[in-house]
Amino acid sequence: MRLLLIQNSLYYPAFGGGNKSNRLLMEELAARGHECLVLTRVSEKLDAERLQSFMGELAARGIDVEPGRFGSLRYRLNGVTVHVEDSLLRLREAISREIERFDPTWVLASTDDPLQVLLEAALKAAPGRVIYLARTTLALPFGPDSPVQSPTHLERLQSVRAIVAVSQYVQQYVERWAGLPAITLPISPHPKGPYPKLGKFGAGYVTMVNPCAVKGLSIFVALARLFPEQAFAAVPMWGTTAEDLLALEALPNVRLLPPVEDISKIFEKSSVILVPSLCPDAKPRIVLEAMAHGVPVLASDVGGVAEAKLGVPYLLPVRPVRHYERFVDQQMVPRPVVPEQDVEPWREALAKLLTDRPHYEELAERSYQVAQAYLARLDIGEFERFLSGLALREAEPSAHMLAQPAISPPGTAALKELSPEKRALLARRLGSRSRGGSETST
Image 1 (spheres, rainbow, N blue to C red):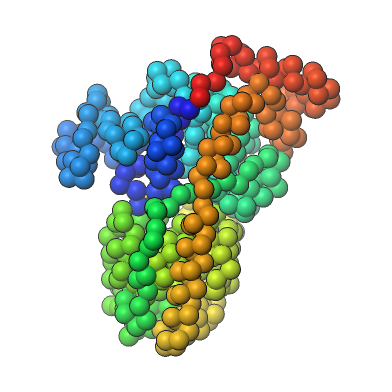
Image 2 (cartoon, rainbow, N blue to C red):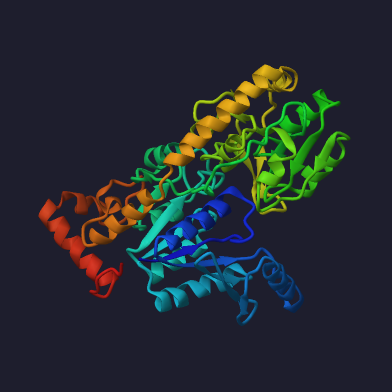
């Protein structure tokens, strides 16, 4: 198969969980013999100076770069061709060109495109061939987790060939609030183990990655104040604002650490990882990564976090964000209205981990064993077989065509009244029209 991934964020180096999961997914598929192309962008305009700097950074990592026009570039990484643009507009324009040139079997559209600029372009250039990778409910245009509701964006999602959810929580959310079918598949591979055990009682920081309002910065700050003799660390990332940095820098026992591609470098310095999300995370990668290295995790009991914890304590209560302001912060993210939090359960759990060595070591070992067993069963082949099955069934009506959507496009009611035979005939004609009558390439 020829597989094209489009995402509105940096592909490499990948610091965020979704970005890293997308990269490893494409590398795994390339290793299985599929031809893989990624269309992505950097967050700042690549003038001549920045372009040279970025190319130099990639070259330092052993990656040969081919510069293109107007700030674009291409390189090969672990069997995957990566095309980078420096603006959303240029990335959108590149989608139609690359789809025509590459003729992908499937286009994988990532959720990190909340305005659906890239999804819209992909649907126009490759109708019937777009698979939506739902990695978060926050970027979806419907339901209680979404800061922005958009019937237009919902209708666009009704046109994708399939929605693949990263967790059961996301799958059930899509089905409940949009009336669209989704399937949970392992689309977040991890590097092959074994992993070193890095958790050490009494040694290292209490660490939070991506400290910001929706990720529970208020709980982290409160705990740092309650444990003034304990060293804390914060790793600023995509959600961290200048205001957040000021709050962190005001705490004498908090150290700021730079984000790194190899997350184990953070775990080497940490005794406990805090994931106090106030928004319903889909299935936070950081939780499983820390557990796989034997580092205990204190996480909030919202969204799909429990799926990442795999039955290992601790899941702690929070008062989740339910409302957002009409304005966005400097990261162009809607500003959440953060409820006052009860940090006492967090204080008790952290105090026990910091003072009870047998308890700490038991939890660290259990985390390690459970995570290792999970990773041993993780099979990207499930996603590969799903895509192959879709290719074989391309002429059949999609599940989206036959489902009753929350907002029905014109003709949906009439479609549901057709007999199975007439629906199959209609789907064959639509499939032929969308691909010019050709077969799907595999």
